[in-house]
Image 1 (cartoon, rainbow, N blue to C red):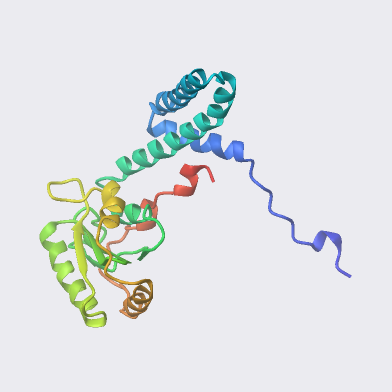
Image 2 (image 1 turned 45 degrees about the vertical axis):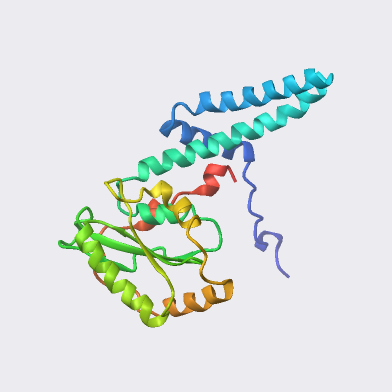
Length: 240
């Protein structure tokens, strides 16, 4: 007969208030002005509620209705400011492309690691060229990091691979960075959303399987590159 002590222990639920406080302190360290913006959002909603209440003759009812809405507005500001601060820290660092992709909503497939890389020296991350790949209804998106002339060569090779297994599927290329003509990581999500859909969900599934059949990257990635470190923990920013 199994003993009581042999039963698996139930996972302890984390206090949501402690998690929120932890997230708040983390964001405040990288964005000291977050308090001011949260306060402005909260007070602004209360002010609008008070004005509506005065006009309708139901001041206290409108005030109490506006109170939770003001708290929600402050939480939204906290999340947005934290997201922006995270992207600001990410800009200019290798692996920023995967960080930007992690902010994309559902409906996209993307690889956690680069599908192509070119390093002149082992361990030299700053001069390495890398390409990350994503797939959505607009087609295949290649995001490159590193020196433009070497990234362009990788774009050509990866585009040929895509055309070989998925002919006719559009391929979009962007170099991620903060330089002239480059795409900042914080704008990756909005840029992809604005692309015109070309594939159905069923076609996306087929293309994704074909892309997965391509041989993975086993060499060329410089030592020390860990794109997962650049991923933004959106659940933490939302306090969930």
